[in-house]
Length: 256
Image (cartoon, rainbow, N blue to C red; front, side, top):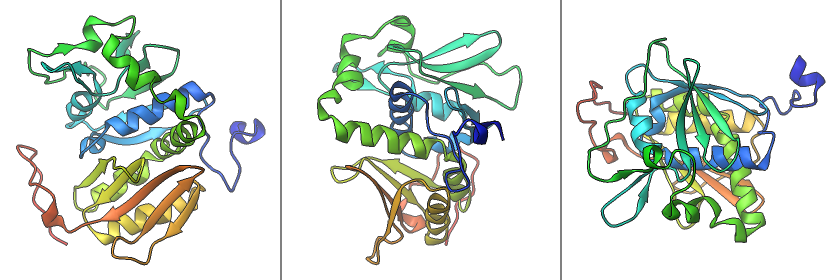
């Protein structure tokens, strides 16, 4: 009710948007960094105007850390989310942006949880070595899209909104244990579920949450696309056999 009185949400738009362009941009980079099935290391989100809280899976949190914490490989390429840092604060852990005050709180079901990424030694771990500023190799990933103008702002806004509907993605992935995030030349993000039922539930949830303009696609890649200005996200499905069997995950292989 407080959010309603402040104009942050309505019956038609039940999820609040990020309060600043910087927060939107940070959340968009965070979602884009959760490629592959790393997004399943998160189970839910508590949206907020400024500081949302991400809820970590009790057994898969390390997948999230390995996917998003920035590191530099031997060839000088940045992996993970440029500018993202993990910061403690009185027993709470945050993903923060090294360039501004944008941040996202981490919540783990075990109160004594401490971050323990499994990054192999060797490549420089930028989140450790450049805790208070950007490594030069990260600057393009953080500031390089500023010249795209409206396209970049539309993408930030759309991906931030999708992150704030994380529970819908987690629910779709729980259908058979798989959901895959990737980027392509045609889409800012592709969310691929392992079966049609999970993809349809995700698409229906996005429509009901007033995410943006959701188009139905009657082609073979149904259920459809989500458009916001010049940004576009695709929701797709594939057969379970198109996904690699998880290694050492303890998950049983599912079929549709």
